[in-house]
Length: 114
Image 1: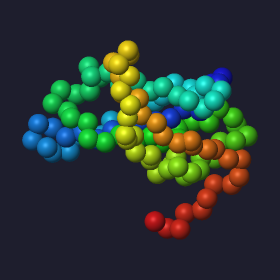
Image 2: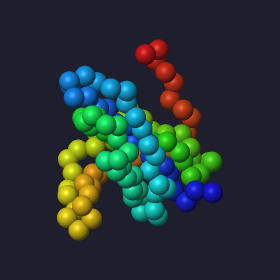
Image 3: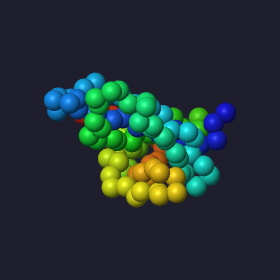
Image 4: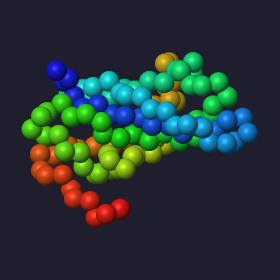
């Protein structure tokens, strides 16, 4: 059983000629009790000649079966842009923030045909 929610990070890249390449995505670890998550991406995990242009975070999995309907609060469904970031010198990493995101126990919203 997961202890927290899971977020999907989806990134778009361009190649050396500035043409868009196929987007890629990866999952975060489960959130901690305060709702924070860590999703890491190492340069060696990115395709050669791929320059990341944009990444967005999306709700992926709820830890609770009774509260599993995602909401678009803070763009949890449509995708929250990862920007700006804070550089952590001691860890040599960029720290992005998004959210907070929310799940609800209510019914799923109905589509308006779009």
